[in-house]
Amino acid sequence: MKLLFDANLSPRLVSLLGDLFPGSTHVEDFANLDADDDEVWAYALQNEYVIVTKDADFDTMSRLAIYSPKIVWIRRGNCSTSLIEHILRTNFESVSALCDEASELSVLVLY
Image (cartoon, rainbow, N blue to C red):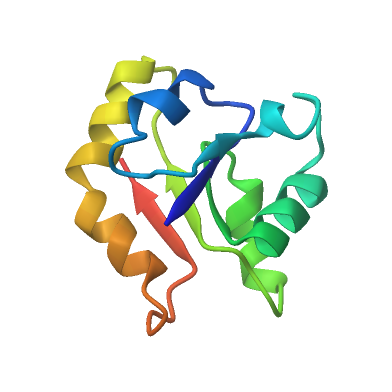
């Protein structure tokens, strides 16, 4: 299970969470930080990443799409990178369940 961290999250999360989510990457690793959502979406779908974002647009896109990458939507306002790390660590089982091939869910909302 590889995560793709959106531009609104710190690239440090890749290394901070590498023990739980090996092979993860950040948008800045393949595109400019101003990459549009469609570009991030296509990259995640093509490379089998789960998008981790604070952006509501990906939830909307997933409702309208025939094929959607899995999305972890973090619904927190301004918060530290360490809090985002904590949220993902404590919800590892939920993220894993989202990524299960049998799961029909496309979006996991974390607070």
